[in-house]
Length: 385
Ligand SMILES: *Cc1c(COP(=O)(O)O)cnc(C)c1O
Image 1: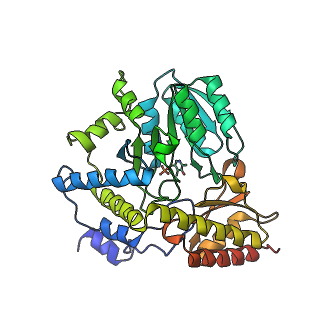
Image 2: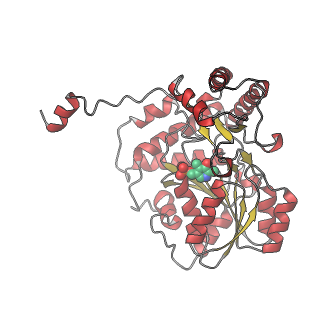
Image 3: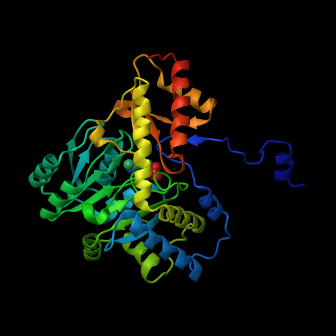
């Protein structure tokens, strides 16, 4: 017996047996069984014609998910933050003015990445949970005349949905490009990339697409592709250089990096699951479950953090009732029925629960299951209404 086998036999490293979890948090979310099956398929070489076909399928399926006909889609080997970094590294240059519609944690991350690229970042500030009206967006962009604007479509830290249409229209009028963070929205609610007018969008696999974390699907408008081609200075990040990645994944298929084959299988299957249901049906299922969820929450005497018109249907922020220890509620849910939800952080620490109802969990039965267990945990933590 090898040392490893002996130790395993002795129980020091027991076989993997993850606990059963219902992932009602902001992500990762539940993975569809078809996606788990895809992950177990044998890998081929990353320049094998079979894999190139898989990459091509993924790019094609992403067009539907993003809602783009003329845009280019490609996939970054890294999580959502790698997509964010790719957006910032490729479309900003030192000294360029970048305006950020700040209203939560992820717009802060976008700010930090842009500053590290040497951009001149100008922030428009709002509270966590608020959004920008069309007039505010237009005025800010007309006043600042940036080269690039950035906003977070679905701000996972607050539960607020920022519409992008006015931002994109004003930016284009000013000759600016728009970076839109679609990490939480893609697959769960309409992004409508072309119609909204986003130029550079990035997302992840582990939220609205019901796939494990590991890839960042992006969409680039024609305007963005032109800007990329026109860029004269090399992108400081070699790994995230979109010209190189685009060439590798869609043009020459010459080696850039070794794409994580199994994750591409998984993403392809996750996108097929979306297609089989129909993306509009999927949005509608999430909206219906969201309405049910909110109804149940309000019936318990609780309230939502974000006004109705601005809510993300897949990620709910519920206010923690006065005097209740939110960490205790989360622990009761995890230790009891195995339900994971998240708490708030930053200015919302201790003030909200963040509850995702997405993918396979967005069904009538699962919403009722969640509400019942949540009610029990709140009661056990001292809540009565
Ligand atoms: C999760 C998230 C990210 C970061 O994605 P990772 O996959 O965790 O790197 C960025 N933006 C938003 C809005 C997110 O919800």
